Image (cartoon, rainbow, N blue to C red; front, side, top):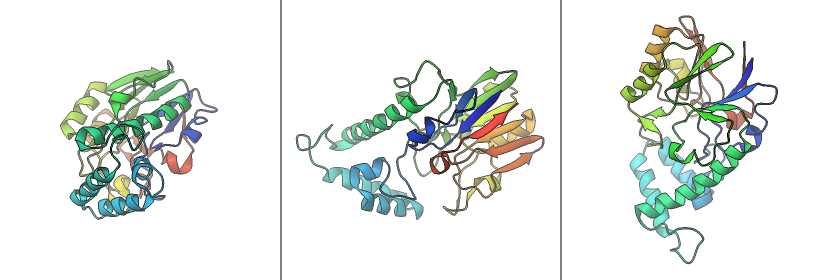
Length: 268
């Protein structure tokens, strides 16, 4: 059997449509949405709402870890938007209005992404995803797994989605203990599928962003104890090391799909 694996799709519906070509199934490790594009500031939900210049300023604040200032900028931009009646869609006034504006933009992306998503596909969430919105766009051949396992041609694949709590406050973050509970529910698997990497420094350092992303200590412990054949993940777009071994387990970053448009192939 051959499966193609993608992660960090971030809006690439065009490439997603052909990502399973030549494979029996697609595995998606999350981060379908594009909120910000750090390489092209004109792309993403933030830029579509406020323009590339404001997106650039917002990104610069986040890169400098000035998160309170970045959030204050976002609030000011929402407050400056035209009130209801002068623009399409819901009024952005107040927290509920901001959420409605973002939800409309998120739904637009999800509609295109899930329409392009091949079948069959096995999916879990990334930290940038909004799980509550997925059910309305899933096709019959899409199966979402988070703290669950599935058998594919004799190999057991376990899935645990989301990310750990961070200063970025992305939509699907949790404590290490909550993530550990999902991993423990899987039992022993041949392939451990997560969005985030285990806490191995060379897998966490992003060479372009020049920062350490957050990996899971619990995931590393589970890998050492249960010894899967593979641990596959994404999250770090330009890792110092794309793969390494932890004991007998091949730990593999499947790549930044938005940038490459190319899935990783796994065959057995």
